Image 1 (cartoon, helix red, strand yellow):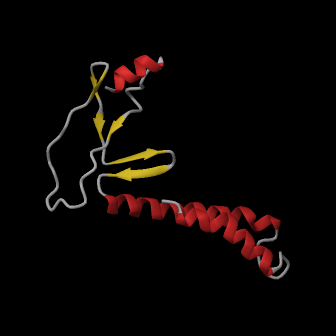
Image 2: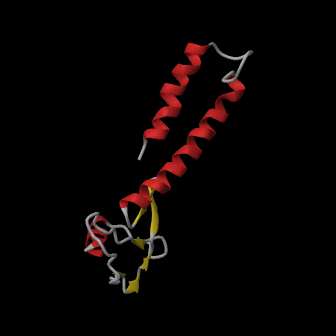
Image 3: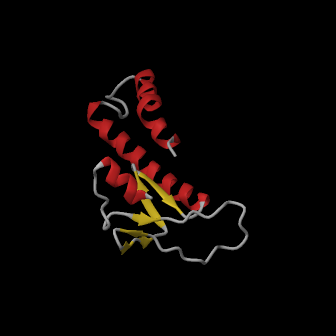
Amino acid sequence: MAEDFANCARYILQQTKTEALKVLPSDSKTPNTGTDNFDIYGKQIANSKVSTHLGLKRSVTIKSSAEENVDNNSQKARRSVYSFMPTGFHGAGGLDIPTMLHIMKIFVIPIFLRT
C-alpha cells in the first residue's frame, strides 16, 4: 500500500530510515508477542520499540511514549531557558520580573505542554 502511494506521488521510500512500530491498544492486559513483517520493495522493515517522528518519540504503549516525551520536553525547556541567560534572563542585573514571566509564558511553558 505504501509502495503504491509512493509510486503515484513519484518518490522513493527509504528502506534504511523506515521503521515499523506496532502500537499496543491501551486495554490489552497481555502484550501481543506476535511479530508482523512488513516489506518495502522486497526488503523487510525493522521492527522497533521507539521511533521518532517530527521530533516526538513514539513507543509501543501510550505510557512509555509519554515518559519519553516528558523527559525530552524538560530537557528542551531547560535549554531554551539557558539560551535566554545572555539577554538578561537572570537575577539582579537582568530583566524586570513581568518581562521574565512573559518570556517564560511565551517560550518555555509551551515546550513543557507539547506532547
